[in-house]
Image (cartoon, rainbow, N blue to C red):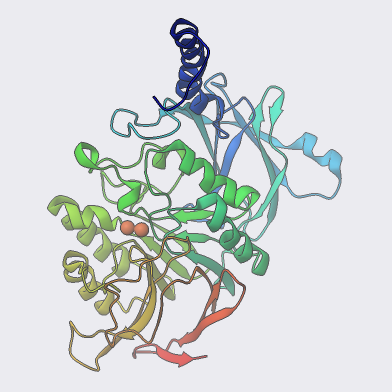
Length: 440
Ligand SMILES: [Fe+2]
Ligand SMILES: [Fe+2]
C-alpha cells in the first residue's frame, strides 16, 4: 500500500467512481467542445483560387455549418464610396457537404466535422481591375475583401511559391505566408508545391492552414498542387483529400479523373501548370494521361514563360529518394519545350540548380531551373544529397520565394522566415537558345 488513509474502502471507491463519472465524459467530449475550427453560420476558410484566365474570372470558396444550404457572393468594382456596395451583383453559390474521413483516421482529434462548402466563379470581369466582394447569407456575411484581376497583357508581375507547409501550420507556417504577403502584397498568385497539410483528412490541420493565411487567402488567388500527404493512406491511398476539391475551386482543364489537381492557368504571359505528381508515382494510368496532357499543354502555349509546380522532385535532394517515374516521364518534355522553371517540394530541404547531373551527361544544361523548397517547420537532416546539380542548397531553413517576370527576364528571390534574402538569380530568355542564368 502506497499511502495510509482513515477513509473506509467503501468511501474511497465511491469517490473514485465520482471522479471517473466526471473525467470520462470530459475526455470523450472535450475534443468536440474545444475544436477551435468548428464551422458556424458565418463564412470561414474564404479563399480565392486561380482560374484558367485570371484576367477575366476569379473563383472564391468558403465554408459554413450545414445549417446554411444556400449561400451567395456579391461583387462590384472597388469604389471609395461605401454606399456603392448596394449596387453589387449577387450570385448564388454552388454548395456541397463534406465530412472528414473518420473511418481511417481514428486518431484525428476532431472527428465528425461536417460542413458545407460554397463556391462561386466571377466571370466577365475587366482585366487589371480592383473588385470588392463578400460572401455569406442572411445575417451572416464576411467583410468586403478586395482583389485585382490580372492584366490581359504580358506585363510585369510577381507571384509567390511555397514548398511543403505540412506541419506546425498555425504556429510556424503562419510567419512565412504573412512575411511573404508583407513583402509583396500585390502578387498575382500563391503557388503551393504539395503537402499543404500532414493528414489530408484532418479538419483541424486544414483549419490551421486557413487560419495561418487568414485574409491573405481571400485576397491573393491560391494555386495548390497536391502532395502525397494531400492523399489518403492505407486503403485510401488513391483518394484525394475529401477537402481538396470542395475547398479549392480550380480550373477543370486537366486530364479526366485529375480535375483540380492537374490543371493550368495563364497569367500575363506565363503559363502555370500543376501536375499531380503523386498519381504519376502511384499509377500507370495517370502517368500516361498526364504525359499526353502535358505534351498538349506545352505544345499549344501562347505564353512567353512556363512555370510548372508539383510535389515529387525530378531531382531529389535526398540520397534515399529518386522519383524515376516523374523524371523519365516529364524531363524529356521540359527539355523539348524549354520549360523555364520547375517548383517542387517533398524533401524538406532546399536546393536549386540547372545542371542535370548525375543522371544526365555531365555539364549539360537544358535551360530549365529545378527548385526544391520547404516553407513549413518540418525539416530533414539525414540522407541529404550533395550532388553537383545543385547550385545552392540548405537544411533547416524555412523559406518562401518571390518570383517576378518582366518581358524577357525572370527574377527569383528566396527569403527566409527571418526576413533575410537567402538565394537570388535571374533567368534571361534568349531566342533559340537556353535561358541565361545570372547569379545575384
Ligand atoms: Fe512533405
Ligand atoms: Fe511529400
